[in-house]
Image (cartoon, rainbow, N blue to C red):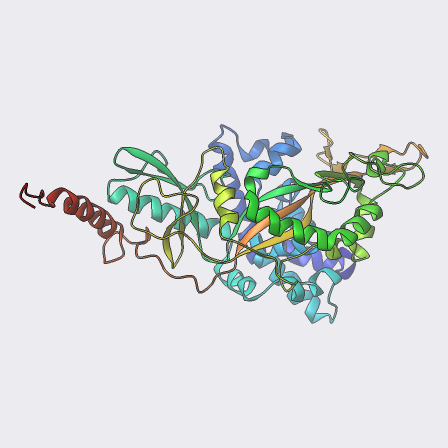
Length: 441
C-alpha cells in the first residue's frame, strides 16, 4: 500500500495519537503474554521468528510490526493487500486501518487491497472500529465468565483469562469432575482451523487430504472436500504462479516437462519467493483460490464440524459459551448439563495463509532487513524466501440460533449459573424422592 501514500502521509500516521494509543495497548498485552513466560518486551528484537509469531498472534500483522509504532504503520501500509491480510488488519488494528482509509479517501485514491474490502468485510468491521482492539474486549469477557464460575463455586484451575490461547478459555467443575470451556463473543466468531495437504498429481479423490482428519470429522470433511474440488482449478493456477526457478522447492511437485508428480505435495506448506507471491496476489490468483468468506459464495458445514474441531484438541472441549446466546454442548455432554447441543450453521473459509519472511537484525545498528538467498539459476539474483499453508477455517453463521436456557454470563436470574445448578439439583432430588413401588402393585 505504500505507493498509494506518500512518506509524509506515513509520518503523519506514525505521529497520530490514536494510532499511538492503539499500538501502546497492543504492546501492553504483548508484554503481559511475554511475562507469563518469563520474558519481556525489551527482549523482543532478540527473539526468533517462531517466538514472534506465537506471542504477537491476533495483535500484530507479524512480529516485526511490534517493534515500534513506525514498524506498526509501515507493516500495514506495505502489506500485500490480500483478502485475509486486510481482514486481519481490520480485525486487530481497526484504528490504524480507519486512519489509512480516511487518508486514501481524502486524496481520492483507493488502494487495490482496500477496494477489495467491499468484497470481504461487513458490518462487523464497523463495530470493531468503535469498540477498539478485539483482544482486550475478548479477554475481558472471558474473565467475566471465569469470575462468574468462581462466584458460584464451580471454577476450575484457570483463574485468569488468556484471550488468545490455543487451548481452552476456562474450566468448570461439576460433581468433582473438571470440564474445559470455549468462550465466543458472538455468533460471528471464527473457530479453529486446519491445514490442507494437496497432491496435484494424485488420482481423483486422493489429491486433497486434511493434515489432521480429526479436526473435520466425516461430515465436515465431506463439505470441505467438495468445496476444495470446486476450487481446484483456481488453486492449481495459484500454485503454478508461485513457481520461481530461484526457489526450486516451489516446483517440486512438477516434473521437468511440467507434468504433475504423483505423491508429491504442493501444500500443506507451500514454498515460493516473496516476489512470486506478490505477483500472484496482484494478478488476483490468490483471491480466486479462496472460498467461503466475506461476500464470496458461502460454504456451509454441519454443526458437527466444530464439534470435531474442539473434541480433537489436546484437552478436549465439550462446552461452548456464546455471547448473547448462552451455554451449549458440542461433541458430548459428559457433565449432563440441562442445555442443548449447538445446532448453528457453520461456514467454512478456504484461503492461503502466508507465514512471512525471515528477518535479520544488525546488532550494532539495530537495522532490520529480510534475509535473501542466491538463486541457483543466477547467483547474483538474490530473493526472499516465502512460505505458508492452505487453510480451512470454521466460522459461525447462525445469528438467529435458538438461545440456550442457561448462560454463564449471569450468576443470578432465571438463566444464570445458580438457576442451572438448582435445576440440576432439583432433577437429582426428583429422582431421589420418587416413592418405591409397593409390593402389592
